[in-house]
Image 1 (cartoon, chains in turn purple, red):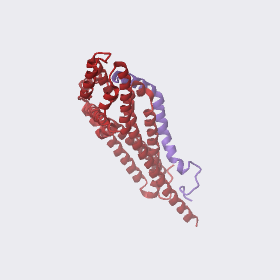
Image 2 (cartoon, chains in turn red, blue; image 1 turned 90 degrees about the vertical axis):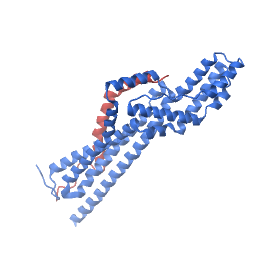
Image 3 (cartoon, helix red, strand yellow; image 1 turned 180 degrees about the vertical axis):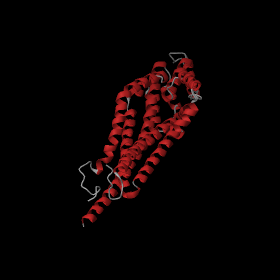
Image 4 (tube, rainbow over the protein chains, first blue to last red; image 1 turned 120 degrees about the vertical axis):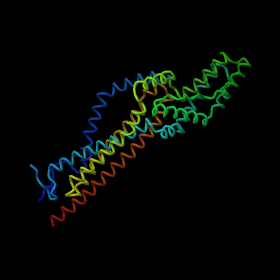
Length: 53
Length: 295
């Protein structure tokens, strides 16, 4: 029996997209947690400078 | 070890194909989200579309009417007469001019003419009130305050900061060049995605049907990331930061982010559906091949 036809114990075919998206989402979440508050603060200052109350 | 499978694909080729599929998912989502960002910055059509948003204009109209009522009580003029001069059509026109200002600023880096509210009709009403001696303040002060209130609702930005900021930015860098380059980024992302798809096809040329699994996974993963980006846009949409600064501008951004999130959501969903359809075809073909080999 070929490697391809063997019953695999690995990840299900339907979960492959989720497994592929997980590291991208994790990296994005890390970026948001790490830099989000700083960007938020900076934007807040910029908005106060440009926008009239 | 470089095991060769039925179709003759080596393990190394499969690993490389997985890497290409992962990169395809990354660049697909980056291309879609990048297109959304570029649209937000440079699309005149989108800005004009937002400017004509009926919900936003209605919100501005109600806010202006409420403020006129408050000011009429404070200054002693007829609120109804002043409210009659403020129409939704005129608000739409001012929003259109604001959108043109934004587009000019964001695409050329030049602050154009700041939109102004035509105060003619309001002026006559205030002067009549001044003649009838019902005003509590000088007519010019009242006219100025009413005009400022209407303009602040539609276009609540500090003129001096924008003019000075855009001039400074223009002196420091080639804004037009930077914007032109930014516009090309989604196209670059699309080309890299296409290259990744090509690499998968080349690596799995010996057993084409296997590539369905890789394309399906990449498309669906790209769709999932795009949908996450869409959720991010909706979170930004409901962020209280702009609402605290100015309710009118928050309304404009609310409409803009809503339209972008909708586009992003549709594309993301289509990608997920397309990806899972490919995986379904792959699964069916694989099952039928397994059944054949067993018989």
